[in-house]
Picture 1 (spheres, helix red, strand yellow):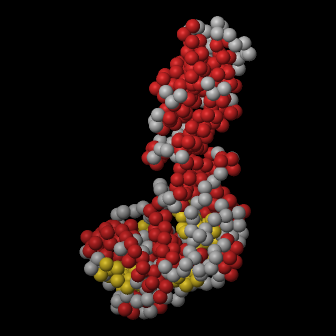
Picture 2 (tube, rainbow, N blue to C red):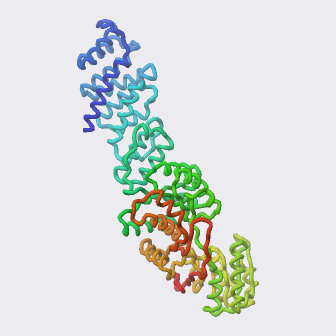
Picture 3 (tube, rainbow, N blue to C red):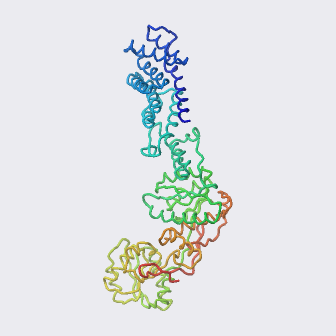
Amino acid sequence: MKNCILLSLITVLIFLIASIMGCGPVKDENSPEGLTALAESAFNSGKVSESLAYYSRAIEDFPENPLYSTWQFGRGMSLLALDRLEEASEAASQALLSAIDSHGKASAMLLLSQVEMEQGSFRNGIETLMNMQQDHLDHDESEFAVELLRLTLEEVDMDYLTAEPSTGWTEVFFLLELEKRYAAVGNTEKAILTGMEIDRLFPEAHQRYGRPDIATAENGFVALVLPLSGEGSTYAERVRSGVDLAFKISSGLFSSVPEVITFDCAGDSADIVEIMNSLGSNGSCLSVIGPLTSRNAELAAPLAQRWSLPMITPAATSSRLDDYGDYVHRLVVSQGNDAAAVAEYAVRKAGCQKLAIIHEFTSESVAYAEQFSSVVQELGGEIVGMEGYESGATDYRDQINAIKYQYPDGIFLPVEAWDAIQLAPQLRFYRVESRLFGTSGWDDDILLEQGGEYVEGAVFSVSFGSGSMNPATARFSYFYEREYDEMPTMLAAQGYDTAVIILNAWMGSLPSRSSLHNHLKNLNIFFGATGMCTLGNVSIPRSAFPLVMVVDGEIISIE
């Protein structure tokens, strides 16, 4: 079938020869012009062998004539029509070498590419077209070149299409072929991404050449817009793992669940704007989860509002996002009294009466330290020392020596996990043998990976309670560990909750932007893996926080 189509295309170009020649009506066998007219007339009448004879005679009798390239071209066309491909290739090459203008060169290359394709050398034919200047052809030849290229691209394998991106006039057709193939095999993500690239580089291409039917889920897709490469990719992967889990669980519960498709914005502002505009204009896109940071979310927010595309960012914290409109949302995890919960455990459960605090000089760490100190004293305990250090410090000798001889039986470290794994060994080195207590900043894989024996027995809060008995949290943790064989992080829980909020809007019914929009506008409190959370700038405080302990190198719930 493909060969038949190719032959029909060749027939089209054969008749273009009349416009290429542009010769007068004189038809005698003794002049260059007469032989040219006779050859052209024979060719157009279907007398290809006769045409070949006239072109060959002209070449032989008048080798220095300016029409030499035209005769070689005509000879090549005749040989191609007679299926004498090797000779046709040689004639086309001679026409190219002897061409005296840009149009002649482009026409000869078009003919040469045809011959190569007829010989089965599809890659050679494509590469000849890539090197040809399409704008040097006339309109009909140019249209033929496009059809020839598109037909031939269907014959090459995928590795060739993706090996080295095409440039110049052929680039758009490589992308269109890639988009079509991705769509045909159901690779929705790559099909959409390729289509977005086409829209960016060639805004009118889809309108002119069409867009394939992309096999998204029956009821559209949810776009996950995250920086999955470059800066922030580690954190983005955590969010993605939670989102993917939510969609996987829902697909087993409902028959009508949209597909989730990931778009890598790589943290680049231009990428985010391009992605949001493409998603907004795509009616199959039902909503957006992301971006990751407040800065990038603020780039996406006005576009989500413009396209009436519901968007929830699972991790951005800027309250400015609440002012962009009712299509823009951020997940707000309720802030809790985790320092107070740790203080209560230290005094009432662990029996510590003399406690010290080493904190970082940041507003958050200082606030935790003050809350811990206040609760300890309310419960009858004593704070025997409170020392601070500058951000980025790695030597805590002065702070440790300042509390060492107060002989605390517990030390509270309201710091991030990275600081905790440096503080803990130094406390041991300076012979401070005290129970260690921390906050949710300790909830990171690095604590177990590098803290080792120095954090054994430490108690700290977890912001979403990976070991919580809260049904939603426990369910999430169970499925997450079963799916990924590791403990979930807070970002994974936030991604999971964001996805569940979106999926709950449909509950198996036909998904749409409008139904999700109405659901999000009316959402008050959501109880999820992160506990109580809301959308927007309303945060609901907790009365208690889940606590965990490091036991034999593992995290164990102590609720």
